[in-house]
Image 1 (tube, rainbow, N blue to C red):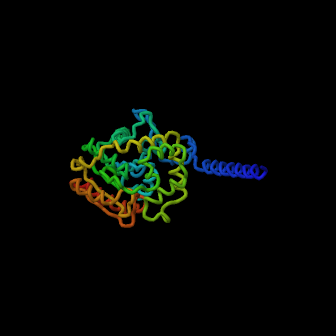
Image 2 (image 1 turned 45 degrees about the vertical axis):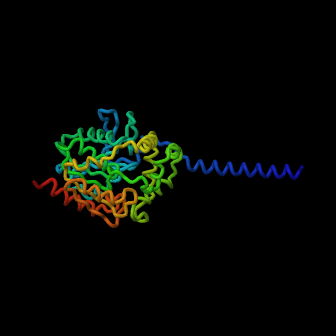
Image 3 (image 1 turned 180 degrees about the vertical axis):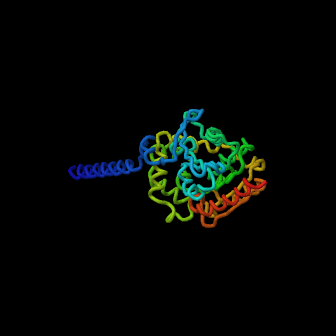
Length: 326
């Protein structure tokens, strides 16, 4: 009997030990919300400002570059923020007025009361931002999700868009067996998405960033990982991401509409893009009449950050023709 009790005691201790280990592991995985106020202190600069739009959303905007030059609006990708454009802004600041902003559910704009994060809703949000200014027409530059929003905007308001620059853009009908990268592998799982509301480990953000670029060792920094991780955890933003991802399959493809895209269009794609394969850029180029495609062999999904000098040179050459020649 003593041996049995002793064995049971050891078993109980083992179970308690396992429970403690699991509890510690869970505490490391659980990521609490951060307030907008504490994040503002870290992620604004002297060009940042906030504005309440007619819809009630408070948007975070940066207005940079040369205010006497043509206006260029910069639309970031999924779970990114306006910070993704800073390397490109540094390259183009003398040539254009560069206006970047955080889309709904992202960055320091965060969740909106409408809780609509569809492509059309983001295009309408973009219009609200553009209407803060007295511009007759603008150029739109968009990456990934932001490219899809730029396309939607150009289709909705063709006379108000001078030119489009699309970097690894969304908008095409994609294969169902498209390979998943990092956190994007969660998109097809309702359970995983719901868990993401509480379990958002920093290493998942790191894995995602490292998976979408060509040379993660030289590109991905601790500062970058922390920024993505913290902005994702702003109160309401994870719920917004979950809603957007869970409704992604309801988004109609823009592919049938692409032949109607009117503005001059430059497509930039990293040949090593593992998130949106370059084949979609090639296909998009055949559908948008008169578009120009540039493939970067040494870039992945974020060519504007991975190769800002080359991206800026190609944008400058393209806009010189699109904006300044009849």
